[in-house]
View 1 (cartoon, one colour):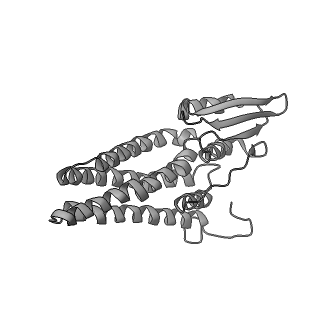
View 2: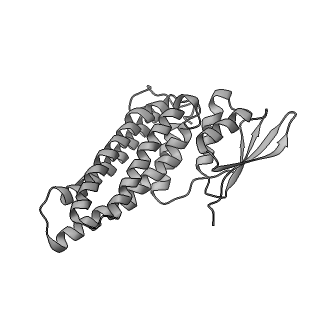
View 3: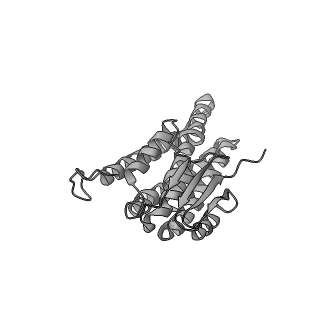
Length: 247
């Protein structure tokens, strides 16, 4: 969070949230530009033989590598945080549908056998990726900036950490009793987003978090675990986990 000693004008370059948002827009813009640069070689230039095979391979490597890594990191950090608030849950569902379509098209690109198939998949991926990243920067980011409990500079730092191959700090206990009610759920969903399959954390609350469990069920289905450690009357503790990947 921004320290109380810092003075800035909201929505300007002095605002940490504004700077973080601009940094994210720049990062997503680089991903799109790098993809389009490689796709243009495949779809617009007349290449033959080994030159086309090499261009196809570079495009597929980027799509299955950096592009997919960016989508995964954005989903773990940005989408997961917004999924914890009623005001942005439907937006996240829509974004995840587009993201799923992007990833299916990446797989189609990877499995393409001919240059014509590669070119077709590359053009479809361009349209889907552009739509997803535009919605992320023009709709999701402003929504996160207005979302109680969501700290955009911290979220962007977390995204960079994942993109650089690092791991997010994962505290074992999240005590929300001193956090205002309207800001709790985004914090909790953001913490859940940091879990690897099979990992968990303990939520400490001053009431039985039944509404939170309903939100988890609506958002994550059967992908999470929920175990009461302590059930009142003044303190509730729940171990929330990400379900392990089946063997």
